[in-house]
Length: 481
Image (cartoon, rainbow, N blue to C red):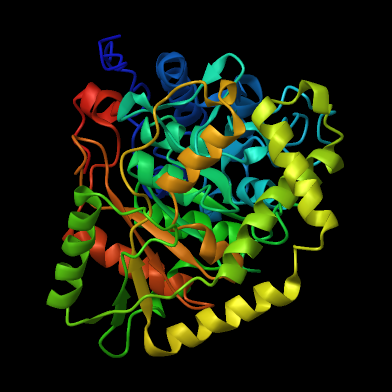
């Protein structure tokens, strides 16, 4: 490890057919469907890569080597293999949904769960599409925080291991950015997909309410949490999103192209007073707007203001949702992290005071729907600067955690509260080699439009798909095209 905390690569880990590790999910599935690659070889190569890089990033709570190889063999033998959209694609699942035969710890040593008897609906959909679950990824306790760490573990950013991969889907993001899997499951209650994507140079979509089955039981945070995926390409994200939603990705994207010039609103105003996006973040916004204008879009400065009532509603759900989760899961409060004990106590008080109000959320959603009557999409920052340091944040106090989280990521939570879709995509390495990103938000039902627009921006402003030190294709000397 050097002075920055980064650990240099030690050589190629891209084993298997034609450097399969680091290839997009769309290519892997196509080759497994056609029989030129076997799912077993694909999974074996990815597990070998996980074994090589996992000690440096800490993405996985558990790697499912034996069961993954057995599942891959089943894909190879499946009579319908040629029609499986994710045939043989290795995927990782966040540690807060059920994977049959495994435990979901929700990142807490205070939780002693029994193994799940059946898969969560989103895991079942991935498997039915031919995906192979190779591991379960780390999360911060109760998925509350925007850095992923816990007792004895710190999940690190593959672009700079001195920095966090963010949270709460930080393990999933680190797994994808380091090439361990081409796509990974995550979920997003106040940015938990979008913040790790921004930190790790990935593309993701938090869908609107009701598009994908949401987290069951715990972790719904008053209906704000949505399941989704992290990927390195828009095509992979569209495919994974369609599978999770039970939809056809081709139909969704083909119907999304704008019939008229796109109306783009842009705002860099932070909902948190005193917080501003840094120069790299502003440059990323400007680069996106330049491309949109060149494509004929109309751009206007327009800010969807968050009212004090909406801000209170968002924070009430964040706190009360965690308290409800701790209660539903039967967590031993004495064994919880100190920051989480305070967080859940505050949540219990807010719940008791009746501050989780459906009426306030419905009013905010209607206000945001009116905003989008004059715009097709809204472009905003997603984070104020580089990711938080990779450190044991769980050893720090409640105030330090809440302050750091709020100042780094003020632009995400409003769209969970409104139940509207929001996408994050990388726009070049603008922070001393670290990724920069922008957020694009749309009205209800605009997931296809957001994915289409992201695809156009990917073509015009292509990004590096993996962190250089962990890029399996570069390490193996295999062309990435």
